[in-house]
Image 1 (cartoon, one colour):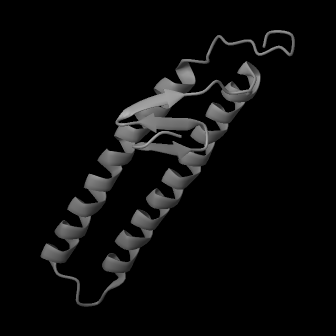
Image 2 (cartoon, helix red, strand yellow):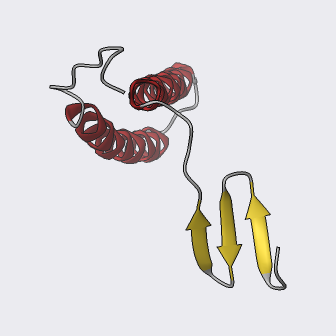
Length: 108
């Protein structure tokens, strides 16, 4: 490795320019990995949505909850739901890229 370079598993950086080495991962495995990553992200988003629902339930159940508190909680949850909706659109576009992909073992 030359002076001014950084090595990180399969990518080597030469003063700001990445040098990417070829991977031995098959096409089928790469597609499977991408689909699995979308599934993991979906699971994480579902946990966040669940936590937001619990937040609403806690505030609503409070005896001293004011209308301002309810509105602030609603605004916070709405903001999170909007962010998750945007992320869902990105995840959908990732899956759409492989919609017509036939991953047979002989097509590596």
